[in-house]
Amino acid sequence: MLRKILIIAIALTVVLPAALVLLYRVVPPPVTPLMLIRLTEGQGLERDWTPLERIDRQVPQAVIAAEDNLFCEHSGFDWNAMGEVIDELNEGGAPRGASTISMQLAKNLFLWPGRSYVRKAIEAYLTLYVELLLPKRRIMELYLNVAEWGPGIYGAEAASRHHFGKSAATLSSREAALLAVTLPAPLRWSAGKPNGYVAGRAGTIQRRIGQLGPLLNCVRA
Image 1: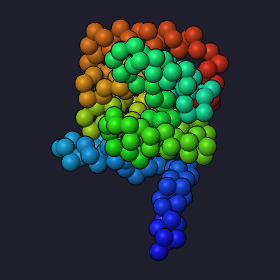
Image 2: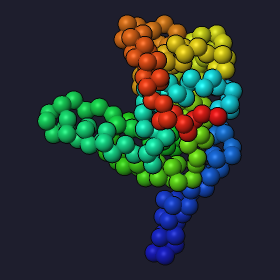
Image 3: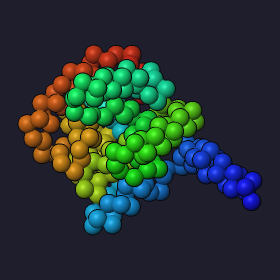
């Protein structure tokens, strides 16, 4: 009996995550936990899976500039950023996120929203599979297709059409930056109707893209 329990535990914690990540290496995820949760909250489900090659190159670049400057360099975790957050907490500062794009993808694909330490630990564990089994371009492609960009809006293509009335393939650098800026709070901020903070932050992201240089190489065709 104990052996069966152990086998089941190993299957659930090791084999299943690896199998799903490998599956998503070639197959688009049909749905994510967040999408299902939002549906129960009365939101719709607007998405249109789009290969990375059909998304303007400025979109992944803007996302890296806004969310994870070292995406192409790290192995799933930005230890420097995490150390800074710990230092700030020790000094009594307000908590802030240090999630990389890989960590956000692991959360989006498999987990529920929230800030508990348990969920964060599971997210970190799943991030190992994401980084070990997926190339960086596929990580970005998956992320840009499952990220939430408004009530019931998921993925860059649906977001582009909802906020700007155009395909993600034809976005301007400004529009790409506006989308990237709203990722941390897609239900509060709008790329199509930016408030002062979003508009100003988008300008910063546009300038930062030009400064990142080789740090964007992994998402360049």
